Image (cartoon, rainbow, N blue to C red; front, side, top):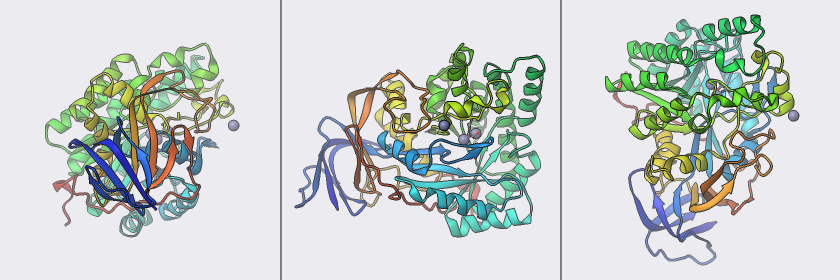
Length: 469
Ligand code: URP
Ligand code: ZN
Ligand code: ZN
Ligand code: ZN
């Protein structure tokens, strides 16, 4: 199977240049001007367009059992939606129940992911601790290509990690050459604020952001960073949503600490007015954690991306349909937390980032694929258009427009937090492992075509703090 993408401008994180890209058997085999077109090659005309590495969404939840239900998108529909939006690799989360074996949970998720249409890889959550967890972390790193472990500092009485767990797991990750990641919200504070709001009779979705103010997130971000500093381990903070958390990251980085931060497409462009809507279904559809924030937080997050203190963009794609969200209309603490976005992240970040001059096209590549590939050690297999890399490409028309809507999306759940936004800058073609899987609105995703991506420990990009003992 040979494909040539002709006449476009290749955009990598370090430079952009006019080149054709020749793909053969799933890999990029040549990048250069005026390449010969092999006989029988499929030709994609990229004239006037950019040719970029396929997006990596470092934070999704497909087929996740969560808060008493299961997300609407499974690994096929979710990865297929990603391909339609130019995202060719997702990083999902294995989330064991407390007391459940990490290895058993990992194999369960690997089974669910077999139907993925795009490539995938897993962070594994550490939700409890004993000697078998310690041992399983080692097995996951040494035998299963896992190099990142997730810690939920929120979700008390479910999967919340206390300080003891953070310290033990961070230490274990360090010795294994894996990176700890955290969902930073103080779960005890959230719990107490939720009880107070319910007692006062504030029970609808409007209460959700009130129970999780920025200070609650910032406390946890500062604590995780402080623990990582004492343990001398790098740390990656998922879904940074507010200026105060970003300040914690910025401060630590200024002192030389290896702290990385992720911004969600939703947090970059949606504000907290959504929770004050009189339309209960609309408000509940936006319940996710951390919540959408006031506008000045969005400005701060963009500054974080521009200044390099936030390295990645993600979606936290975690879709629930209206009936699922409705279970919590009278008690906001029961609304399953999560929103979609895997299909729209690239276009949203381009439209609000590149079109406004906040990001250059190369910086766009940095924050949509290259940095995630480097931090999580998939580079240069992923995150760059270069000979030897996987032929995961998005051909991007900077002048193409699309109005985002749940009516036309491929993702499930029947709702889109970006509904009605018209974006300029859209994918015209997506290649995954050399195969044309999306062409001008037509999705050709193949169930089961996605592959698991092994990620070795000791990523060279996150450096000296993780030297082998
Ligand atoms: O509300 C969210 N974000 N749901 C998914 C789980 C998580 O916290 O990332
Ligand atoms: Zn989270
Ligand atoms: Zn998440
Ligand atoms: Zn449903």
